Structures are given as structure tokens and as C-alpha cells.
Length: 110
Image 1: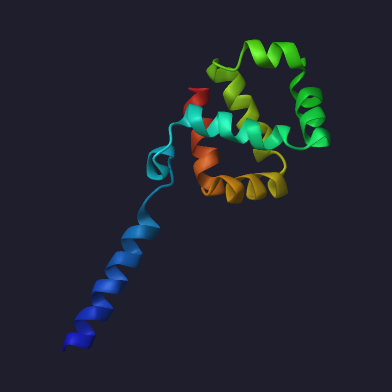
Image 2: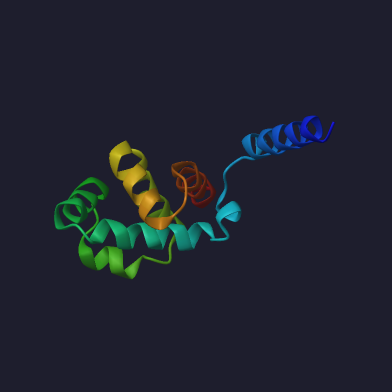
């Protein structure tokens, strides 16, 4: 019976994990921290950084001055969400899930 109980316990744990909704709280990071970390990842690549500025319409100075604004932080995460390969690579680099980045974007957009 011990084997049956172990399988049940593992199954219950797995179901619990699958039912949890990803959120910045699950990673222990705030939405703001995730957005700024994502921005740091974006800025490591000049072409990606230029694309961010082009698509958001921000200048480098505007970006620097408005880093603390939730709307700009949300725009950074939306930029990633609009290009799935970057979203996945950024999430991997930050050791979070793409869903956590998306949840952070939603939280910041409120």
C-alpha cells in the first residue's frame, strides 16, 4: 500500500502545481523587478534594444527618465510578449516562466 500512497501523493502534488497560476509572487520577484530585469536582458543586444525603442516610440533618454513608471515597465514586458522567441529566451535568462513575465505585464498595466 505504500507504493499506492506515494503515487497518489505525487499525483496530488503535480495537480496542485499545475493548478497554480503563474504570477510574479511565485518567483519571489515583484512585477517591477521582473520588468527591470527584462529590460536589462533586452539591452544586452543592440538590435533588440533598437527594436524596443523603435516599437515603443521612446528615446533612450525618455526610457531612462521613465524607468519607474508602471506604464513603461509594462511596455517592456509587452515588447517581449509580442515576440515569443525573445519572451522565452528572456524568461530562461531570468529563471522565470514566460507566464510569469506575462502576469507581471498584466499587473503593471492595471
